[in-house]
Image (cartoon, rainbow, N blue to C red; front, side, top):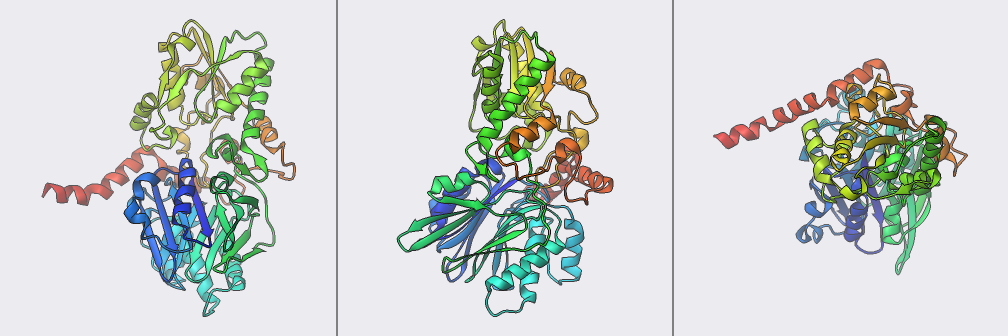
Length: 502
């Protein structure tokens, strides 16, 4: 999961890119990067939050009226500074690229890029692979300068070689900004426009909320398989680069990843979450019509919308029972179980008054590892709750998501091969209710009936690209286990540790 943005403006774009990345910070808290261009390319990227990576002395050097930005949460590859995005290659023209998603054939592509395309790869990042595929295909068109036609032909060739879920922003020196969305439309990408004294300015970003913050008007979503090119003169070019597309946006965007004030594929994330709460309330009334719930309490922040509507539907009091420390990151994407467990209690503080001697229904957007859920239920009981029930606005997460969300290996998912009752015992709830997958789909699809399917792979185990095999999942698991990641990070740090000892 990452956030991407690209802007072609009439004035310097460094501040606008910075502001967009701060708004998209929820999509990646590991690293941030900005690249701008005038007569040359200027780049600044580093591990850390946007506010920490960019100081005034860095911003003044990011000159130019076009640029791209990226915030990263590492999914494929590792979390080292070397893999912070955007990536750069000098041939042809000078190209920078940032990417949200995962390539499912990255390993195969890497071999082809090195041996067939004769290009060098410096990291294990699939973004670097994607950049070199795009650069190679563009070089094959052999133009002295990048034209819209050559770029679109290169994107068509890229789609033919690449598999997975990906949304891309790329900048070509003296050319412009390119936006690309995968043929299945798994990862989100939108286009915006605003009027400026010198003419029209354009933006491409992961979510519409970035456009709102900068005063851009949302034009539309980039279509699955489509490429968007904004040249240095500020002209917009578009082309569908795939003959057959399959519109299957990731449903987890609406459950958790996107901000509620975003609109993705003409669906309001906020409205979708309201309907999730209504559907979940109806399920509770169906399964437990004689419930004894005294109060509904959300687990901030992403579950608030669903929880409020659920409480209204049940006719039960809604209360804020947890206060969130804003300076603690999202726990389920934190590296290492021990760190996640410690961070839950740092992140949330219970208001005892709302729990004491009450039967409490806690509502969360989803249950992934179960770490957060278990800790929060313990906190509720310590605060004096009589009984603690738990409701998830999403179905059981039983399978890894391989399209750009670093959900853990299947063995680390608390619901994998377990019933609802077993999960309830593990997290310590008196009872647990999950949203059903059909109800979730109906809740999200309600506003856009044209979307016939969603990527629901983490719930259903059905992968829309059709190339995810058991062998592939086993390989993903071998790379994503916490123990494997810890060993890999230790190995990466060994040279520095040895040097410090000497």
